[in-house]
Image 1 (cartoon, rainbow, N blue to C red):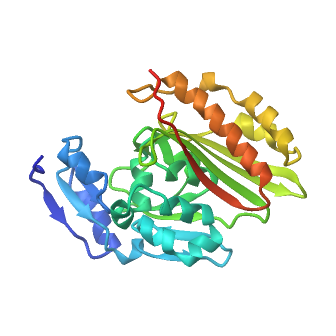
Image 2: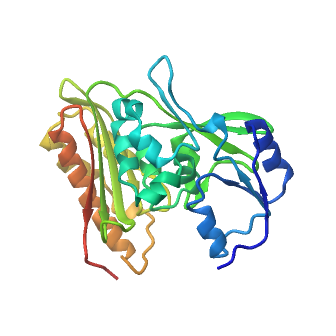
Length: 302
């Protein structure tokens, strides 16, 4: 489909970008364009103008603060994240996630900011960043904000960004020694979207779970922390005995899932429990490592 006529602007500075987003009613941010261009072609989005922020220096860097917090600019591409020695050293699960996303063309253009701001239920980064306890810095003509992942992702294809507000960076605090991060998801095929996704983070001290973050993705419309599961495993030995209480605490009936041509809502919830079990199993087998793994299935459920 031919793209509809619209205004295109490329600001040279971050203040100029936020001013344009405020002054041009109906304007939208263009970063990597992997989602926006498709939305335009399918007539799913009708912005009056595209504000191209991809080349803004303020959004392009990868830095580490004095306390070890990793700061990734919103316009940094998946390929740049995957290739970064700093990300691989401090947050290997983030680097491995970026390295396995879709295909090379998308990895070279898609950005972490775009992935988070779209918050498509099938996107990989929102559940992982929620499990890592990330937070986001934003800028607008009215000033700057810091938003935790727990509140940033507010619903299917929705975030807590305000009109005219621009995501500038993603912040991930250095994980405690002994932390184990495991990502499991079920796909119809190796290059398809996930039917169910679970990310498990266990902070382990002296073989005891000192804290946990367990996040469900793909099944609900937005990343969902399974706080009952987190409470069930915290304070217990980090071994196979975690599996039973974790599964007992998982209440699939409380998860709002939507079925489609690939799988029914009930099947997605059932598979979420399977991925949770497998993620916990992998986590208790680790020793302060990370693990990103996918499972594929050729079956469908109606």
